Image 1 (cartoon, helix red, strand yellow):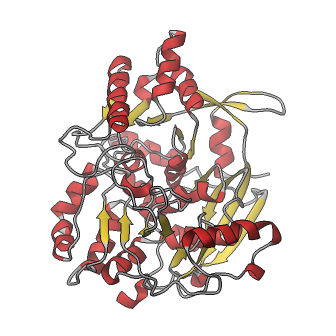
Image 2 (cartoon, rainbow, N blue to C red):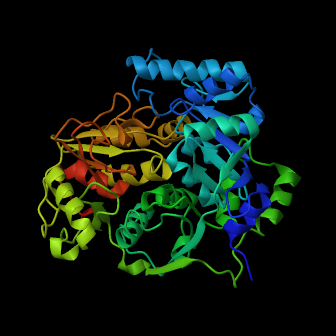
Length: 465
């Protein structure tokens, strides 16, 4: 029987297997940030343990950093304390830190790929659920809890139950105005926010193979939003071209040798999956969420479902979500006024995203009622946007390109959405209060978000294409 790419990588990293139980998995790369590490480092110190392999760890500050005036002290006391603690811990244990002021600083799941740390065949963890982003490179990547962060710091291994295998095939041609964010929101709307629970998902099919690496990262990023442990896409020439020449990627002959190894990372034709779905790319439209989990999504031209459309065990949550959002069943969202737009996060803050929104904004003006935050995912993305003149295009349209960080993805820093306000967001979660207490989040692609920013209301991005 053939094996999937997931099985090939997983089995090659098992240190020890417990019969009918979890397995000890060796971790190639450990990404850390300021939120989930303080207690982990404290636990090591209490036990008198060193960090086992500091050279396998990459640290950055992202969740709690401001996205304006980063050269000044952080205003929020808790945020400042967490960032300062990360600096102290990295200095103590000899860990490379890309903190504020460093030219490589940025969101952990943006800097890993762009610097060449993320490579095919790796196992990657981070104390952040959206570590699944790195699976776009043909790696097994998943989020871990704080106690597991401590375990990996001490042993470079983690204890895990092996997930089941799922494959999702997207074949055919995408329609105009449809981005990878729409693909993943469409998938989650079809299988639900819990449909991937217990699985590791491989994305395949002709539509997936045509996507850029940045688009693939968006899809794998949101695997966790369907309950999956992670997502993975087999590497190919698009992957290799992206990696080539990056700062910490293999160089010269070592790169050529690595490619030959990476080419073996493909699912065998006779591999069997525990569950499999297939979707037609032409059926996907620009998507938008209407509720309080990422599975509550619809095509932007469609109406919100009715109670009759929802299964019995989901009806209470459905009604509660609509009450929170202030929406009514069987209504269309197009034309609904909004006052906030957020373009950023580890889902959609790469240079490709900024190019798309700048192209739509060119020659147009932001709606007067809209507060828009456009936040690059890293200093490298920010600098590249400036080099390409994207900041000037956005400024002419009334937008400001801010400094890198997680920003308004979550209510953990200064960029919070006020209570009761609607925000079209390119981030990954629309839970109650996710972007700030009482905030009402609608997830969408960068094009849909920019269309709303220009009109001041929910707008089909295809109207601008």
